[in-house]
Structures are given as C-alpha cells and as structure tokens.
Image (cartoon, rainbow over all chains, first blue to last red; front, side):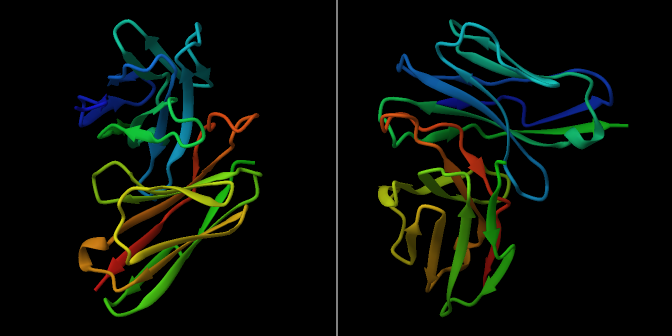
Length: 117
Length: 117
C-alpha cells in the first residue's frame, strides 16, 4: 500500500503566486514525522520543513508552511510568493517512529514545480 | 551548519572496476544513510548505520559494500556493478536523539552520479 501519495506529478505556477503541493499519508502509528524536501536539478535533497504528529501548530519556515490536517492524513506544503529558484522536484516523506533509532523515511513520488516568470 | 559532503560528484566505471564513494559529515550525527535514486524516482534506502554499526540493510546486492570507519565518515565500496546500477547515490545523516531514541531530521549530501558502462 502506498504510504505517501503525491497526486500532482507536475505544476506550473506564475512567479510571486502562492502554491500548494499536496501530500497524503497512511499510517497506523500514533507517533510519526512528516518532512518536505526540495531537489533541484543538481540533485541535492534540501530539507525544507518538518511536522511531528503531536505538534498542534502547523510548522512554518520562512516562505514555507505545512498545512497539517491529521484527521484527513494530509500534510500539504504551501510556498508563499514563489520565486524562480523554487523550480525543483518536491518530495513529501514520512518517518514512522515505531523502531527507535532505525526509523526509515518513506518518500512520495514527488511533484515537479516550475515557476513561470 | 547542516553540511554533508560527498565525493566524487560524478563517477564512470566499467563492470569490472572497483571504486568507492565517500561521505563525510561534521555535525556530530550518529546515524548515516545511503540511498539510491534512479531518474524521476524518489530515493530508495540502501543502508543505515547507527553508532557506526550497520543497523539496516535493505536487501542490497553484495556488489555494494558499506563501511563506516568512524562517526564522521561513510563509504560505499562498489565492485562488479551492472549498468542498471547507474543512478544518483545520496548520503544522509541525522542525529540520534537523547537516550538512544528517535532519529532527527535527515540531511542529505549533494550526491554522486554513477554511470556503469
């Protein structure tokens, strides 16, 4: 069963607009973490933002915020005021915390975001 | 500083060659990871080291041999690879939180693009 689902293979957004990248997840664990990573064409995976399953507030990091809806099992990434440098592949990932010290990250299939000038 | 370095950036090797990939971090992280990423796919976990000991091997063929000589270094020794092993190899590290518990955010290096001829 797919644990992380990203339904948008590609998105085109006008520069300076806000964009929402969708992510839904499936777990029976009560304790887990959700991450977003950005991967430019150079290949490096850049950590953007983290949300713990027990965190009551949505995480924010600069222009990035995570819209966490636990009951719906969704963890959408919102990028405000998009910039040309935001063009990249974006991966949602989940860490299930049932195996302390040996947790794995499960990645979604990614969304390729293209910012149009 | 959240820097993970990897060398070389690019590697071309024949099927009979032996080569090694190197990963280094100086963040004091005690968990280190190797991932393989094929084009247009998410990263796939290969190996996890916790406290310099191999804790997870995701059924990786023996032509890939990991080594963790100390807490800052992670190597991946390659021997008799196949053309289908051509991929981006990513190294990551994370802190193991107090009490030997959960691992923290994984930070990735820039990767090594491997081509097997």
